Length: 471
Image (cartoon, rainbow, N blue to C red; front, side, top):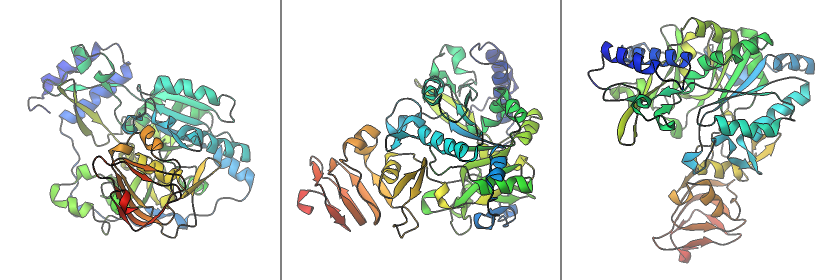
């Protein structure tokens, strides 16, 4: 941020934003509010000595939840209070795909979105319920998603889409909106993080419509988390205990040390992110012993509470400044996260859920896991193979040759068996035959200029391979 950012900057910004015809008054006001908060320096500092580990009343162990009611009419009553909302604003660009990430094929020719629809359809068919699916798109994914959801029009599920806010990127030097300088293409704008789900749900009119249908809770999750399926035990618990907000957390592994964690702070539960932690405490924050859980971004929120807090303009989540560069111009985008809203809701809790509820696909190494024999597909849900003894998944590291989905798929005749694999590193010009079995700890790194082909049916266990002579 330029040191000269002052009240004058804000006045100039307001007049520039007023002239942006591409966005609504709600978006203009939301954006100005966000920038004002940022400029006022109201960043929330956490006093390390005041942090307390949450008790089991605050972060409830999943195995202590009451069983789901047995009768199908009781289950229908539960489900009829529920809405499922998937965060669908992301593009598949990091995996070399165009369009929304949710249309990448995950398994058996089915995309993330197909699996989500199948899961909810099955619930609606089984119990005679009417759980709707909401997709929060960004301006990046809206048009494509509108076309894609047409294929589900004969499904036993109501699908609604709405857009999250579209905010202008700020030029770092003078704090003016990039689009006012002539950059009116998509690069001039950004979606302000998933904390925007609450005002956008309200601004779109969807929130009032859902409340008028008697809906009470929304289950919010990332569209790429294959573990985020409707859980009746959680829903039942929240309704019984009148909790306004619930964050699903799960035990950290070494791969999750940067994930936000739940703490008790000044009598409330709140999310602590690594960005809020002073440098001298970062090592402690990453410690699995001290902070044992992290946020899965599976959130259950009471709709009436959302309405109350949005209308009171009370959701002032921590601002995440995200510096970028567009055509050589340094810009800033200010974002918020939905998990940080936990401290504004009454009777907010965490539930410490099994790891199976957190199965995100962020890279082709994750695709390898979910396409392998480590998982099967049942009713749109990926179920872990009980034949694997180790509760943790294998560590998979794939080189840049495998980064794009198309390259990844072309390099495997079929996905190897990895039920007995501990870890694998693959890099270089490596090609896998069909029916390959990988076990233990493996490194397959082709020497520069060498094409390394793993033959059909090869069984590789605890081995380092750099060339054909090592096979």
